[in-house]
Image 1 (cartoon, rainbow, N blue to C red):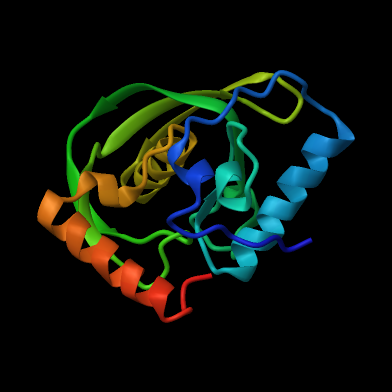
Image 2 (cartoon, rainbow, N blue to C red; image 1 turned 135 degrees about the vertical axis):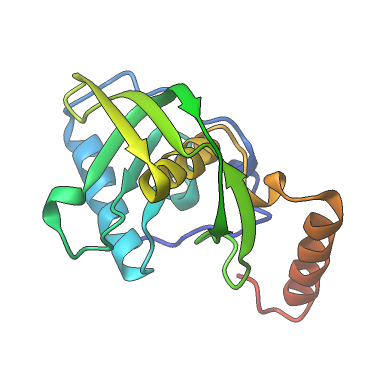
Amino acid sequence: MVRKILKYGEPVLEQKAEAVIEFDTPELREVIADMWETMYAAKGVGLAAPQIGIAQRISVIDISVGEDETKKIVVINPEIASAEGKQTGEEGCLSIPGFREPVTRANKVAVRARNHRGEPIEFCAEELLARAFQHEIDHLNGILFINHLSTLKRDIIRRKIKKLQKAGEWD
């Protein structure tokens, strides 16, 4: 089921999500399936559970945008174990549609997480996949990509969003 993606301004997007403690349940499988459907419908490369109103540490990532089944990644309770290098690239967010800005992140990350069965998994990622992991893990920590921008750029985006909210164009 495609769920509504919450937009900037919803409190759950700026709160740290809770760790998942029950794995391999029908509810967890349903949430993950819905996250895939929702992300693909929105043409995204990643989606965190808080973006659909679920304050749990679950993310789905597919940098192939549905083109390659082997690229699908589900991470539960993920954490970045190490990070190195730097890359700057344009980022957007399904919860902040219409806005894209350059963001500097680590070029390479090692990520530890659990799969849907609760088994430990690890990834070493570079470039776009590293960026996607960092972006999604930020979501789980209540951090949006605009938090990585200068105060001036962030304020400009916030003002534009306020105008859209007043005009009823930000639901």
